[in-house]
Length: 168
Length: 168
Image (cartoon, rainbow over all chains, first blue to last red; front, side, top):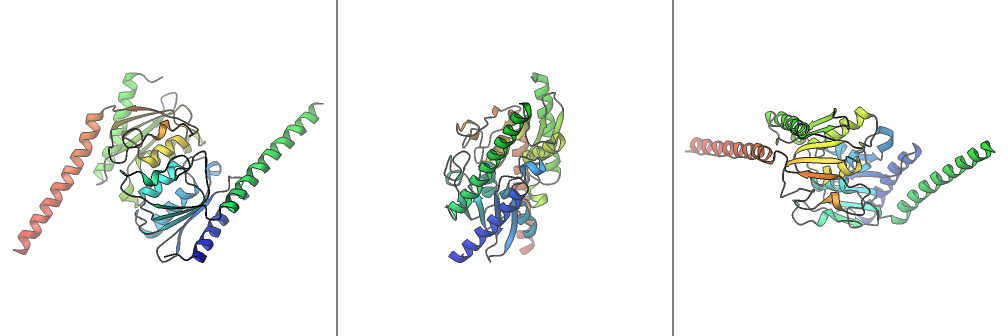
């Protein structure tokens, strides 16, 4: 059973992963997986653009690493911490890998598959139902994304202005 | 636009991939991806047990290969052929990679995310809506799975009987 301090520590590690994405110009999303003893067995950050691979989300990379580290595809009683609500692909991978608890920070009203758009974890027919804990460090995770997209918009605006000035 | 003969040819290639899984003791599921010109740019078969990796479904492997081959994460106007209805993870990856058409063989009443349990492709809020074509070579694909699971049951039965005989 994870303590409140543990949960904070693990989400801060996921945020640290997200910062690695940000530094490389990727949307800042990070994830980590911990085993039942609290050992970090998987980490990942969004690398979709860096790798030009639609499947390279933070959670997928962390799940693959955790499977490799445990030497098995079942991540029984493991917990996943991720800075943004998982999309359908990642929520599906969480179900497939039998992860028990999923802590996420910011909600995703456009693609969230753990309650925001749909809730894959509560579909009765599926053979595993992870437990979702929503909104851990919500403000910090959401702010990180807002800041990233604002910086992009400002950069685009500055580029447009520079082009306009050039043409005049 | 793919002709009827093309579709048959591509689904037979997906079945050929599934046979590779079967030969290695994996549940026989295979997938291929073709670009708008009809060139095969990704292939994959289920390797979950072989790789001890919950994400190693046929579709995921094919999508990763196609992204690598095209050098981009968007598989615009590409088609995916798979012998079994995609699960939520794979249906999510199909949405994320912007695949246009998805042809699948057997239905999956336990985990199918393209109509059988849920339908991720028709969720209005998602930013891409692949077109699903259900039941191409349905009988052949379904039979392949039935034969595989029957053979496993018979093997287990024989092992039980051998153990019982040993103990008597």
